[in-house]
Image 1 (cartoon, rainbow, N blue to C red):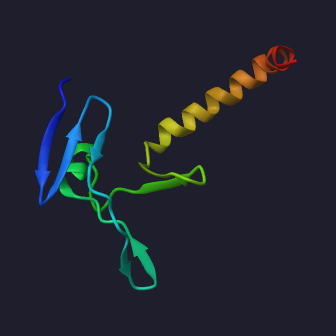
Image 2: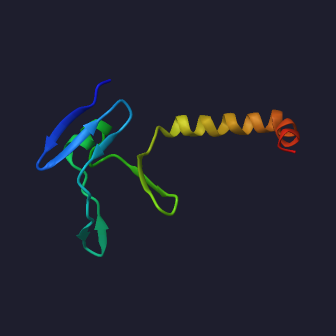
Length: 98
């Protein structure tokens, strides 16, 4: 997929097959006693999220990652499969780790 550029105000979003990148840094906005990150419409549309989308925040201590919460059934099923694999193959995994 060829990169495409969409303009929103004075910001350019570059879309490739895997991510959007903005060439304009963002600042947090004060909202009561908290701070808010304003996400521009082209990025919201690309992620197919809106004001009702639940987001999960995580960090590695340096980078902030904002992820739309995925289908809870899918997450639960994945956890079940991992537990099942651990139950059946836990001994093998331990021996391989040694």
